[in-house]
Amino acid sequence: MEFQGYRRPDGKVGVRNHVLVIPSVVCSQGAAEMISRNMKGSVYLPNVFGCAQVGEDRAQTKRTLVGFGLNPNVFSVLVVGNGCENLPAKEIAEALAPGKKRVEFIEIQEVGGTKKTAAKGKKILREMLADAAKLQREPIPVSELIFSTECGGSDYTSGLGSNPALGACSDLIIEEGGTVILSETTELIGAEHLLARRARTPEIGQQVLDLIAWWEKEAIATGQDIRGANPAPGNIAGGITTIEEKSLGCIYKGGTKALEEVIKYAYPPTKKGLVLMDTPGHDIDQLTGMMAGGSQIAVFTTGRGTPTGSPIAPVIKITANAETSKKMKDNIDINVSSVVQGKESVKDAGKRIFDEVIAVASGKLCKAEKLGQRDFCIFKIGLNF
Image 1 (cartoon, rainbow, N blue to C red):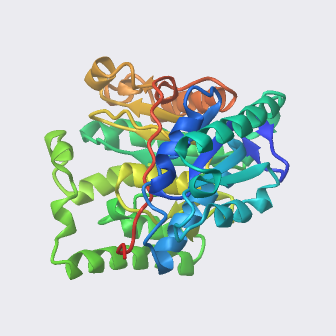
Image 2: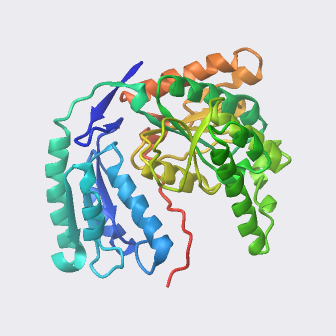
Image 3: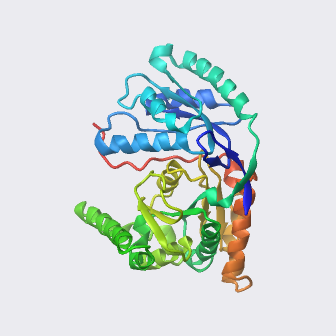
């Protein structure tokens, strides 16, 4: 099975051909937005970090920003800094060298203010966009896809319909040789032992159990019960009564294949097949981490509805709630309520999702893209100083 994608100089493959503007620090976000504004084919990251960060927290912000620049959906990159931040634009630009794509950086203090920076940035961007327009799609095997799974705004239909259908799609992608990322570590609580049983080795299974133990320990250390946030009020209103119910539904997204690897937030997979990325339960943090890890496309299941998207990747929305499909038709791409109604098998619904993934990977716009929904949020793990 093939899709139509873009081959990059480093051999990786994208499903989109964006020119990306990365503000290295929150202070340069405004200039980055001005540079990208009205420049069709370009996007910018609304990054609110990049200064007053130390240690692993700084490293994670850098890794995430660099991961977005290296993502194969990105043709070239312009990094915009202020000039005095502790995560300099030059440092990010230099870290993008392995991608073998064009990378430039400019700093507001060096150029001489926001207006001059915007003018210079637009000039660079025009050149990059002209070069990007020359690249043509070509046939690419599905084995080169890194496919993200996500669920949010869940209700009782998520675990009964949309998540199992997405799991069937995940199995198809893995059978084609592709990679599937399962995330949302905190939403595996109560079902982690089931995922651990599917691990390729006992060591990988233990990593799953250790992750859950760490998150629960961190929650207790703050004096909080993680079960107070999960299920969320909207989940409860949608018919989910316990975190175990939510977790059992969540785990379905990963299909039935063996778990090959556990990776940290915003790190790229090193194995094909099913991979678990350690992320929080926050939807935008999760998507950001998976795209920073090199994922080109995501499917997001929802019961109550969500508009979530990504700056650089299509995020296809699936629901098994017929009412949500009607109420949020401008957000929902595929309605699989027929599974809950007993009119369609999980396997057939999964094939429908798979076919849509191939179509979107080949250039069809999903609804989040049409709406310009470009959500971005880095998982923060330390204090600002």
